[in-house]
Amino acid sequence: MASLRVFSTNNYQSPLLPSSFSSKPLISSPRFVKSPSRRSPIRSILQFNRKPELAGETPRIVVITSGKGGVGKTTTTANVGLSLARYGFSVVAIDADLGLRNLDLLLGLENRVNYTVVEVINGDCRLDQALVRDKRWSNFELLCISKPRSKLPMGFGGKALEWLVDALKTRPEGSPDFIIIDCPAGIDAGFITAITPANEAVLVTTPDITALRDADRVTGLLECDGIRDIKMIVNRVRTDMIKGEDMMSVLDVQEMLGLSLLGVIPEDSEVIRSTNRGFPLVLNKPPTLAGLAFEQAAWRLVEQDSMKAVMVEEEPKKRGFFSFFGG
Image (cartoon, rainbow, N blue to C red; front, side, top):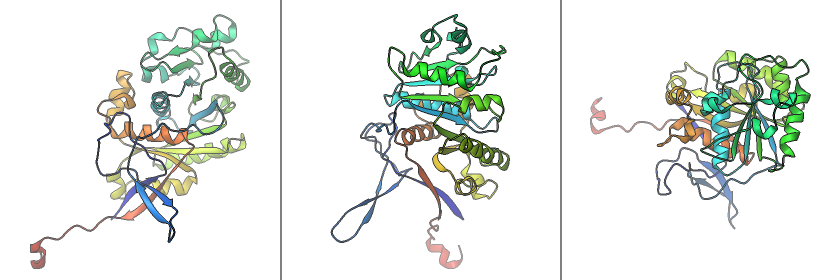
């Protein structure tokens, strides 16, 4: 039976883990060092010995989308956004789900949202009044497009969101390093509005055929809009079902969509608990596997890195002495 191993190209260890943490490496990265005789691969274990280096021009405007609802876009936005803030980068997360926002709930900030972008456009408040600063990490801010069940102005669309992003770039306290846009489900007007100002996209999908068909359609729409830097996060992966051939492997998903792999998030029951508490996974102590996977995805996003999924044969089980007698 074949099992899945994931290979990455970065050195990473969660800030939640002590420096003396030693276990079998979860992520190994093939590195090559020049030597007089030959080039030998060096596999590095998880090490947090440096801050991730920010690649590209700032601010990085990233839209997190999927097409299909319920695959984990908002959960990804909350956890990746807070991971970026914990790495020391300034982050503004925009909930672009018009009338059905949920990002404030996952972050535990629902009682602090007094103004939205609609009030800013109408002149009822300033932009800094609509930004909600997280008390746990002051370099993370939330901005909601509208209040639940409220109606948007007829003229609100992609141009309005571009104006908003430009306002964030030129605000007196400085431009953020990352502007992350939580895209609504579907491919209607809300989707078009959310992707308009973005120059990068993170496509969240699950290993089922319905999500993959929608993800493939969304990939084409993103490319038509001029967004070429598209990476993929495969969410809710269960290795037991993959081994039983009841779920597609990450390698199968990557071959079907043809996208660079940003992260693989395992199925974790702690996601529901963290959502109900308004406490993202990446803040849990001790960390969960899903929380660590989100942190690793955020690290790769900073450095514009990717990972590779490959299938390797499992090591054969060691046979005991009585196996000679058929045991």
